[in-house]
Amino acid sequence: MSRKWLEKEGPYWVSKKIITEEQYTNILQLYSERRSITTLLPVFASLLLGLSILTFVASNWYDIIPSIRFLILLIVTIGFYVAAERYYSNDSRHIGIALMALGVVSFGASIMLVGHMYHFVDYDARVFIFWSIPALILTNAYRSKYLFLLSYAIIMAGQIYSLSSFDEISWFLFAFFIIGLGGLWLREKEELMSWLLSIGLIFQFMAILVTFELAYMWITAILFALYVLTDLLKSELWMRPLRFVTLISGFLLSVFFIHFLDEYHEGYMSIEGELFFPNIYLYFPVMLALVVLSYIYKKRANNLYTAYEWILFLPLFYIWPAGDLFYLLALFAFSGYTLWYGYEQGNRTRINRGVALFLLSTFIAYIKIAWDFLPQYLFFLIGGIILFGLNALLQRKKKDVLSTKKEAGKDE
Amino acid sequence: MNRKRYYLLIIVQIVFLLSMAGSYYAADFFGEEMILKTEPIYVGYSYYENELSLNYEINSLSKSLWRGTDNPEDYRHVFVELAEAEDGVYQAVAIYPDQAEVAQGHLVLKGRLSSSWDEDLYVIYGLERYFASNEMFDALREEGDQLILTVSVQMAPWGQVKINDIINWEAIEYGRRDISYLCSH
Image (cartoon, rainbow over all chains, first blue to last red; front, side, top):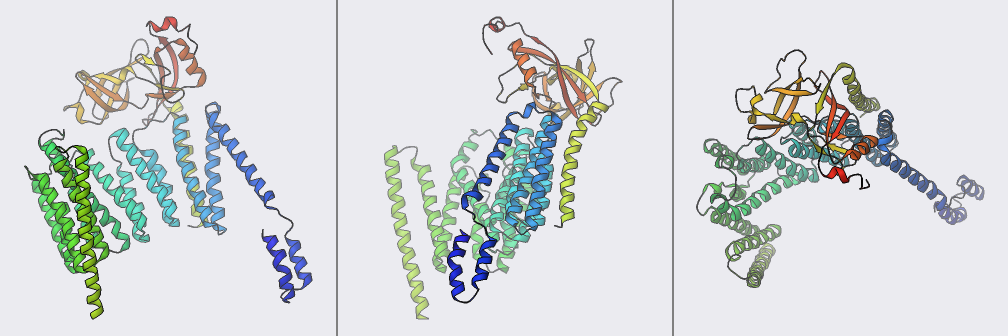
């Protein structure tokens, strides 16, 4: 392709006296005729050859003697790593990182296959612990998002393995998660990392609660603590996912309680009292301290109006009877406040969010109330009408508010 | 990361893998052999190829062997003392909550308490899964559907256990065995 271009442009350059005729032919001679098919063939050939080797090894794996198997694993791992380094230092950074990731994966696969070969016994998630070490070292040294994803996958897979096979959380993996991944996150301040880390963190905290048979509802305190963390640190773009995840979790928990709190209190859920309710003398001081902290930092950042977000973390599960009703009220209050402040500030995003939340809350309330005694078609019909009506109303109000804000802005 | 550190990291990983392999052979050298027998197990019903689900006699232990002061169910890991019986097969003689000094000739296996039921405790040692070679697996399946296997296990002084081999097997006399000659495998 380039040669064609050269042949086309060359004469033009010569005519413009940029290069001489002789120079033009010299340049052309540097690049011999290279049709695209001839460059493609070797690639295909190597691909097929590679696949052949792969399938041969895979299908005959158990027939190869252990020592040779071991050698194969070593060669593959070293091969990827060395190739990665070569490409990286030759300015092909992306290929280098990709090969590095393959090297890490080969290392993990080698650990597992060697363990398998030599009948190693699994007592814990140590395979993942050892596997994650080079992954984390490389992730932090090269600050690569791709390697971050790989390390995250390894650690989370390790935790899930540890929980499902051994009913315990791996403290090493937890520490690696916080220090190895969290440390990089604080330095890189990247949004995707925030999302992944928030979800991973909440998952692991939940696992800790379950493993140590602590009261499950401590999760509300943990969520609230993470929420307050976002108050403490500046709420820049990369912190937003954490705030969002905690609020969403609080919201989902409320929805859960609206539907199932009555089942719990009526004894249908098999969680014992101590396993559910945290010790009041510990829980309330902690929550109070968090509220105070949140208040202080919100005031400092002039964000005090966002205090309504605390509603989602209220321990309403203590209230019985009608605890689920209180949760419903909390959802409406939260959506209502979001809408209110949206209108106040003329903030379109906030209003939209408020509308969505309000409709969602209405829908949840509607399900709770009407599902049991309305026939299905009627349920859906009335539900649809209510939601449409509400939406129309709120959108109209939004238009009004935003246009008056605009006019008010124009007058000034 | 400079080149030297990078290659050092690679070397560390290779050394790690080498030590994994090495400990296997070291277990042969430094460890002790132990013979265990399984309960009747089914061969050939596993999802994975050549996989055997070994259910040992010592997986199911009587609670009367418990030597701790509190409930065995409170513990996640237990230590089982094994002694060699007359036929060479090791049997469980005691269960401890912690590492304990045992009599000469007795071995201690670390296990994870999986569940408990009435009078019994179910303990897993990690030896329950074995991938046999093709020949071994075919030979076992030829014998019948339900077999009792005699397994040779190696115990290293650092606690590593591994299966050496299946040294004997006998089929259980259930009706299925008679027609097994008629069915092709």
